[in-house]
Length: 131
Image (cartoon, rainbow, N blue to C red; front, side, top):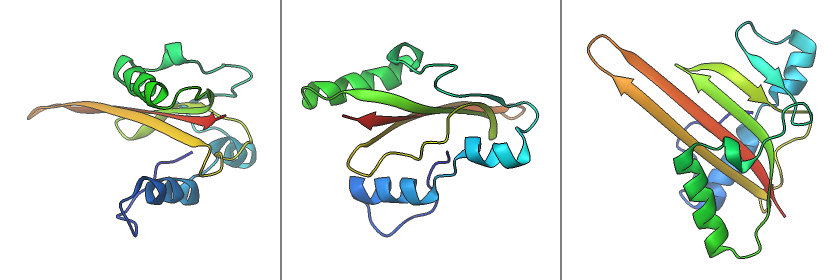
């Protein structure tokens, strides 16, 4: 799974979702052919189930806000990715593609520290299916 890059053609939420879907790479499928890169911890959701408790606090707050504004919304977490300083470190994914545009929920967070002698960033991305 990757995150969309580039400006895209529009700025609506649906435009973003479509760019996300169109640019997604399923690393699980890719790595079945090429092998998992060194330094990446790869498991499947069956091996490492993804749940709300794994979401960073601010990310969980966003999901809670979404649920509050969409009563009855249920999220099934399908994919998780973490990159440290631009390098994948954790991927939880199986062969399933990202959900269809009307069922897709993505939530992410990047935290960073930058000084004259330090630059570190951690990005977490979670992909769920609404149902």
